[in-house]
Length: 347
Image (cartoon, rainbow, N blue to C red; front, top):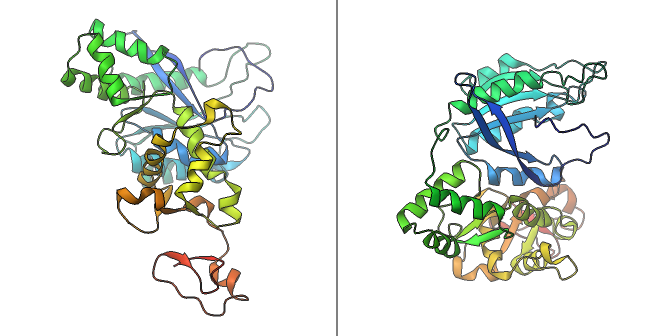
């Protein structure tokens, strides 16, 4: 898409990469620069992608013909995007097929019937590796034209930024910080003589065009701006990849354990997160259904809370796993301990 040189054996994307993608408006011929978000496909990162969905945007759901649409979770991804952003526009793209591989076999009508043609714009097949003779990348041109067509109709397209606003955008892009507090952002705006009301409008626009992530409608999350999404995705992946929580406590994790995962002294400094961010991370996981507080003791008791990480719950039914040791199991309708006092039980 970016016309970068082909790299044989290029490593897969870990976390998130954000790079500019240039397309041309089909009607006016004007150049359009998009913030291209490339999400890693590793299983541990998948639940974190939804933290960064926003509209207006053009979404590409990518799948491999050799694995099939079911293995590529095509329907599941479309459903997740649609739930988080009902106005999303999606292009379904088959890739990594090759000249002798399976041709795309996907029930387009079923997907259109389920999600509507206003959501699923069209289907494409591409090959990123250039042809040995022509150096053509099959299907990439048609895909870029479709992206440009959808992008040209997005409400933020063509918006002009005042010079002071653009200066703030450039500072946020070029700065070394992975995140800023809302207070720091407002101070940055004051340096450019931007008042509080305009500063908040600029913040909303920056979120909508993909410059940053800001959850303005959540009273716990609205005080933080995420400038480098991979920094946040990595923090959440530490929890989702925790084998102790998966195997020892079957998905139940205390806030103290989360604190150790997010500030492990054995990790590099860039992969350690200050304690002030830990309640925010937990709230973010709860907002996107990655974790559930098993007892609502109020915000003041978050340090003493225990959460259930849905992805780390055992795939074996509790009654089968515990029947031999626990012929009778008591539960109160929530996650708790069974009668033996050793194993967690989820009602």
